[in-house]
Image (cartoon, rainbow, N blue to C red; front, side, top):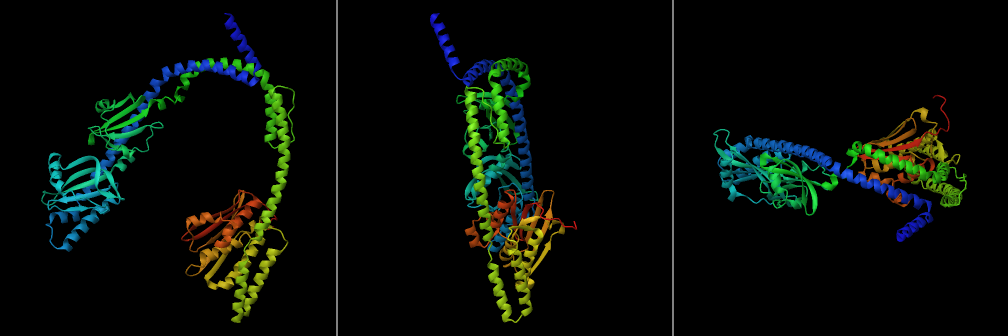
Length: 601
């Protein structure tokens, strides 16, 4: 007794010498441990039968659906086989005695190949083969390395004599390869009857890939690791999502004898683990569809038991709430005050400070929190100043990287026109060049109105029109109500240059560049569209990711333009590219920031 009192005294001393958090955690741990034991006992007794019964019902419905899919699939295969054996070209070839000359044999094979190929190309059929009484074999032409089954020819006929004119054969390796590998196939063997005389003239072998069969149940999920497969009357697996399991035997499994005689579900112990096994017999091929799922996965779902456990849970909840209130009153008040201060900080107010009244863990935490906020505020100020300067430098650098090589091309054009004494066009070209640079260099501002940007771009387009003549057309379709919105200077020129160089230059005949403006409630949209040769999808995706060095090599200026937009207006705005054989469309999204309003609007 004295030893017990000593242990209790020691435990009491340890309990009150620990922190508030530890005491609270220990109290709730002991309480909830008792509640958890009680709940586990009740859940184990009540839930197993409910969840397993529901799983059996749901899985049985899914397997029944698989059985129906099998019927639909095999009905279609039999219909396709019927279409083949009644085909006029096939009937003609098989009813006429084979000719000796090579041309006649080749013509016969082409007829049969065309008929069979026309069927399998539009269906789920893997391959078709025809055998006739003249020991000839015809195939659908979609396979390689065919091993002719002429020695088995008469076996096919004897099979059909005992099974009517149609017989299904279990999954087996194919006598051909497809995509350089042997296929696993289910085969329909059907006699071919002369439509005129009624005599048997051959056999049609129609093969369906086992992958097609497995695909009918591939979408069904049984828990996390459950599986569905199909076995034949000998217990051999004839269809499975894991192809390594094909042709394996389950006849030695503890559930096999049961699934041979029953439809439904039952639990079995397999390799030390309990599994739920659901089966359904499929009469047509004498198969059994089997679903297996670990019962531990079924029993993890406790949500369906919520209503049954509410009454018991309410009692435990009331006890927990009562104890929580008693224990938390002494510690939650300062925590709530600290939480309120944290909300102000999370809202962006870094000048607020929490009041310190306690010297326990909460007081220490409050002091550390105040020190962290002070340091964070100072650090944020430094980072904001640094980032602002970096963005200004980066924006200026990107603005300076706009490639002016068109000036060289323009001067070359002026030189060529001068040699041809086309003085009028020289004057126009020089005037447009002057207007272009007057717009680019005026005011020194990097942000201008859309009207000013369109004027600069139109001058550039006019210079291009003078240089390229009738090979280049352009249209600017922007409503005047959009003219007052702000945009980055030289936003459109790189896009127009890109459309010309990479879209229209290699196009046969004239091309057109369109600039279109649009808006919605929040955004301004500009589109630069060309009807050139377009580009590959991968190239279109990579353009906006190029570095400045990559841009100089590829000739694209879109990545820099995109980055200038994001640096000035934000990451939500920028370029998006769509391209195809019919041309390329570059979409620009900008915020609707007004520099001035059009009086007309």
